[in-house]
Length: 209
Image 1: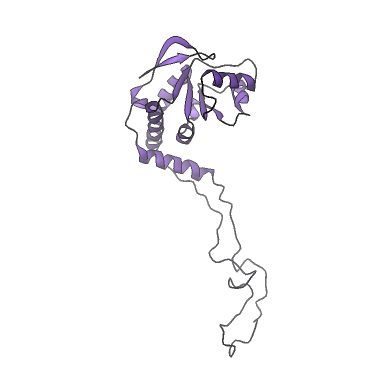
Image 2: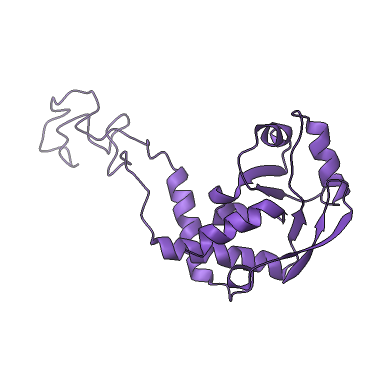
């Protein structure tokens, strides 16, 4: 697959970028995508939820009433879950929700997500991006020039660039990631990808191991 390369003014440079069919042209695997996104969400959970059970709440263990002859069940402690202020039955405890996935499966998931974006014409190739100083206005102009101002956009750069990152930090619809840190969730969450020329080779070297 070949795509035209644009400059920051939103005009074609006359060059073509070749997207590797082993990544952007594969048959997407939906189950791999599901597992990778599920792991991403699981890893975001803090798992610090906690409620007190009956052995952890404070309260008297004195008999509340005589045990027989009342017509009701016996009650031996105010800490019982059936009373207001008592402990909770099987309440949540701190736990780690993260789980492991095979590296090959995670690579397949990323390739599948990129293939979906390629099929939907949701990828724009941009010549290498660099700002002399962090300016949010420059990033807004770039997105407007590419007619993507009304879309959630993921900007993929070859290597970490502080000025580009700071220029997009205040924009709700834009996010900047390096090609080596690209993940399935970010690809699917964005409506359009702006991929720099230099990042294509990084994506290939990462996903075609």
